[in-house]
Length: 117
Image 1: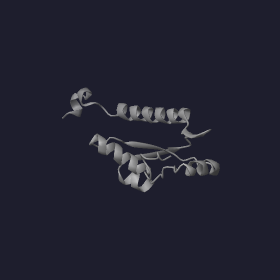
Image 2 (image 1 turned 45 degrees about the vertical axis):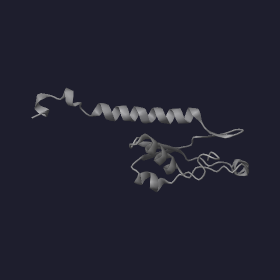
Image 3 (image 1 turned 90 degrees about the vertical axis):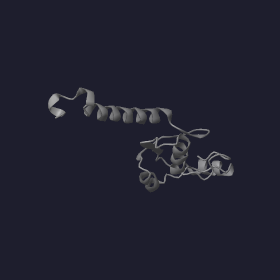
């Protein structure tokens, strides 16, 4: 959801661009997005407060060079929030995938003599 007075009108790609602008470098490899629809009742409630969902502008995100990972990450209660268990599970999956990729590439320090010639 937009944060009134802070991120009004921001898309997912706008959030990525703001993070990388503040970091002064390309910082993100992945973007995790909620793909579960928000109920009409909640959308109306937030609209009265001038808050709207962040648009998942997938093409622009891909053009920025980030991998987009989506999932049902929404938790509705009194407020719309990310489901912490679902988000943590997805983050751990991505971390494990990254570790497997890293471990499958031989380190330059551990190459055999035949690999360096």
